[in-house]
Length: 129
Image (cartoon, rainbow, N blue to C red; front, side, top):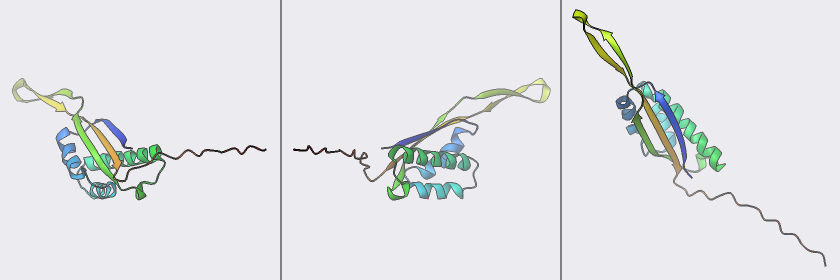
């Protein structure tokens, strides 16, 4: 069972976030966390927090420990979000357009080991003769 986490309207350009997303795509979860933790780039902090959220979502959904189930980053998508458009004063009465970009990030985390559904215990009542 895969788990999903979303980050909406993150005030970083899509291009910068995709560079970080490409580093962790397909990696094991704990390797990806290490890469993000020691990266100097600005989007790595928010991406690390989002990945931790996806791991927690997987743990809540499957009621299993993620350390024992070989989790990996199944899919990561970075899409353009809303763009704030502003004007910046320029020389000779002109105005330059300033576009403040944002993005949406979606991470899917899954286990390489197939996770079985929790077994339902059946109670057998013995009838007295």
